Structure formats: structure tokens, C-alpha cells
Image (cartoon, rainbow, N blue to C red; front, top):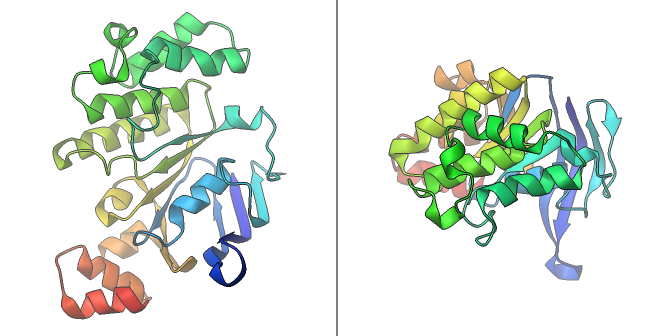
Length: 259
């Protein structure tokens, strides 16, 4: 469903160029949930922004469902590929009601049955009709309900690919599992292909069958979740991340810093 070959993304010019993504290649099968993990700044969120069309300055080859895509995407592309962002409040218009937030993409793409589609997606994400005419700041439950709305907005166009950029990092630990379980259920019900970006190995292991570990813009290792949970990563950096997730260690922190 997703194929990426030798993807490169640079920021800056001249002597100040930073290569955020450095020759990354991977594939994601239909119906698979593929994880990207690594420390902040390693390039994982940049890859999602390229895939969804927000970052147009890239080099390499990208195909979605067998069709190569260019930097400029046609409108139809955005019905097939949608993204859930890290900060739900920052990605929602504060002066748009839930109804407006969900109606707008349907109108842009000329989709019918707006009332029925909105009701269905609100029920699926656990909000319901009672939330339909509220503003983001009026959603009880704070970030939890706002992230449910952000997920609903991504689903309203019935995409085939869902990109998840740290969807639980802005949530309290007590509700992270709730949102992750919701995403797992939605993926199964809608037969979605997903990519999940996170620095939290436990979050990625909960949803993903395979994981790519990134460091300094490169993928250093791709492994199955079972290998991660069984302490079988091969690369030293992956081993350091796994150990660091269990508690601070000065030596391992140095390995992570130097790569």
C-alpha cells in the first residue's frame, strides 16, 4: 500500500543544510500497521508530512496503492490518505464547531449523505450526537475528546491510509490505552493501512506488527514487534532505546546521543 525508496528531505540552505531524512526506504503492506520509532528530531514526523503532502520539498520515490505520487497531490489523493496530528487542540480550528469541522472536508470533496456520515463517525469514535454542535474548548474530557474529534475528521473521508503522528503523546498516561484501543478497533473495522510515529516503544508495540528504528535521519533496523518484546534487536542503537525505555542509564544515554 505504501512504498518509499531512497527518500531524502533537507532543511536550510548552503552551509546550514540539515538532512532530516537521509535515504530512507520501506514498504507497508495493505492492512498493516507499520511503526517508526526514534528520538525527537530523527526525521520520523518529517516522513509522515511528506507522505500526506504537507512537505513538498523532497527527493526519492513514493507510491500509494501502486501509484507513484509527486510533490503536488491531486484532490482525490486526500480522500485516500489522512493524518492524525500530535496536538489535537492545535490541529482543530477553535472557532469551528464539531459539525463544521466534519462538514467542511465532505463539502470540499463533494461527498453526499453528510448528516449520516457525521453521525456514523461520531458514534465510531465514541463522541456521539451530543457533541456535534460544540466547540473544541467545550469538549468534556479535554485532550482525550479533542483527539477523538481529530480522529473523526481524519476518518470522515473514508481513507484507505491513516498516518498517526504521536497520537497519544499529548494525553495523560491513564487515557493513552483508551485512544490506542480505539485506533486498533477502527483499523480493523475499516481495514485501514496505518503508519504510527512515536518515541514510545510501548505505544508502537501495542499497535504495530513491524517497527523501523530511526536515528539521524536513517532507518538503522526494521524488526518485528515480537523481536522487540523478546529483547532480540540487532542494532546497538535499538538495544539502547529498548533499555532506555526501562529507566535512565548514563552509558546508554551516551550511546543514544552519539548514535
